[in-house]
Image 1 (cartoon, rainbow, N blue to C red):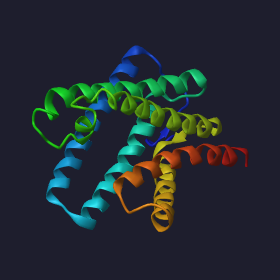
Image 2: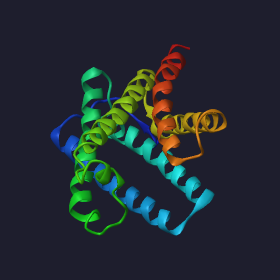
Image 3: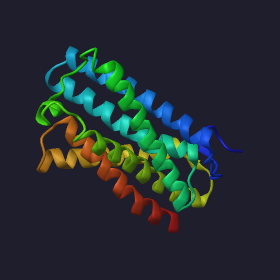
Length: 203
């Protein structure tokens, strides 16, 4: 019997699934950014950094694995469909961010100031990064799925644990204790999770 956290590897790549998942991911991102911004206003110092880092590692796991949870990739093509969900999520967020969050002046726009008042020099990088996170998560999902139904909570949890370990190593060696370092740790954790999943699959 398959539990609620175990997903079969039957791929779903219909338009409704892809577009709906992308829109949902974008809305979840909006909620995460709003919470992040409000907490940043209310907190300072170490508590702020801890809360921000927790939000980033959890948000990274959602962005990496929610597309896979919806698409259930098994091969190269379906991994690409999951990456598209990540891209659509970033696009939906960008539209809401531009139309709603910016006029509310929820947070400062340092990157716009660096770019001479324009965000179009870094927004495409955000889109590419979002697609890459979903792509890496889909790659892990497809490897784990070779052995049967995927426990999405356990799979994402493994990435979170790896990210925390990498964050600790970086913080104790070459990097400061900062939420941006956690974002780097999440990306590295996904990269390391791929060969780890492949190795465990062979055992």
